[in-house]
Length: 274
Ligand SMILES: NC(=O)c1ccc[n+]([C@@H]2O[C@H](COP(=O)([O-])OP(=O)(O)OC[C@H]3O[C@@H](n4cnc5c(N)ncnc54)[C@H](O)[C@@H]3O)[C@@H](O)[C@H]2O)c1
Image (tube, rainbow, N blue to C red; front, top):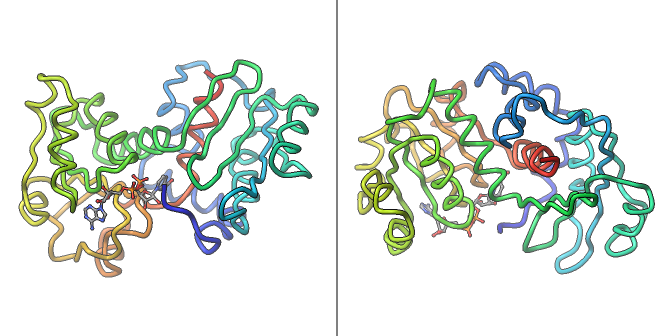
């Protein structure tokens, strides 16, 4: 897991409404609708208002990130959860969450960002939730993914979870990682029927010539120039920082979803309620 930095999260509370407006413009779905669908919660989601969320700051490892707890609080509150940041961090914060009768605890250290339902004991992780949320966003922007080829760039935990979510949506996959052995390893881990829907071993240029649908789950920065992107490219890009260079990001802005925390957190919260 790559650690977030303060600059990536500080503006989330102030800009969450604007973010949601843009998400609706691009996908036709609000954050709440997207997260509800991506979580698989079904047509009758539990009411967030009945489920207090405790955001617990964690000081272990490299410590808290400035603005991180406030960003999680803002996202949960925006979705309608009664949310609060515990006064104490770490174990004391967890005790506080239980004593306050919170339904969900949200917390992250340097290795894992998780939502834990304190009543049902269901735990959800950020990689799977982010993969599902950004896959749903790509599906909405593309008008469906069944039988369409999607290029997945970066095959760490997030890209691997995205590949699985995309296969479930019926997409064919082109896998690309700087470490080429990761493409082969992911291919090998898939069932035989799925392997037939996966292409590996292409250069980035070759891959981008074969599809306009892109899932960027890499931490590479500005390595995709506008000239390399096909006409009509649609990009779901949770990878931080953005893989598109500034010109490409500007050119494809209407068909680009890229943000550091909102979609993954929203999906985690709904998944925790299932
Ligand atoms: N937006 C969100 O909500 C969200 C959530 C989780 C993770 N992330 C971000 O997603 C990215 C991936 O997370 P992860 O935990 O899987 O990371 P990771 O570092 O474990 O894996 C990244 C993979 O990308 C590959 N890679 C790096 N640069 C590349 C490039 N230029 N082209 C192709 N492949 C490249 C690496 O070889 C590696 O296999 C990180 O930047 C992380 O911060 C964002």
